[in-house]
Length: 179
Image (cartoon, rainbow, N blue to C red; front, side):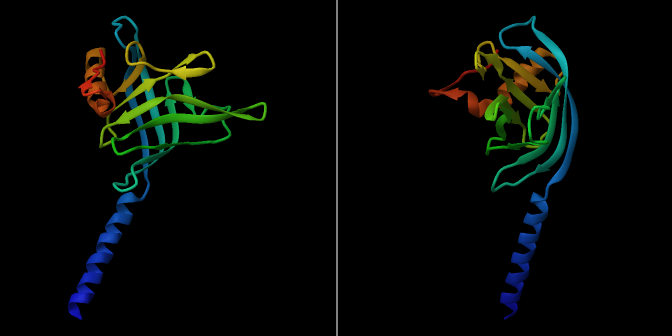
């Protein structure tokens, strides 16, 4: 009987710790980073990135950010969006897409800004920033735009980007390192 009661107490404690650990926590952070083009030493600029919302860390379902994002002078979600917040559902490698839906002429239009890759502590990140290409937005690992923070220079940004995107850059048995 005592063993059953002890087991119930332990299970209750484990469930309580899990619930407390996944409770959304305020995540209001400002990062100083750089926006740069791959394979170009000339094209880069300093940029400030602001996250304002709630971060949920869940080792079973994955991490999630709900709030607003400001990258330089770009607000996400934009003023055209019906939503006041975006939701970033991170996968097991802690990356996700930055998307929003904008309604034009009664039709939904998906705007995909890029992919964001965070470290496990949510202290460093890099964004593969998509650019408008015809009717859509694209990015490529050859000459694409990147936003990385917190970093001071391009060399540090490339190193951090390769580290954070490692799982994504593995293709056909080899790594396609960013340059």
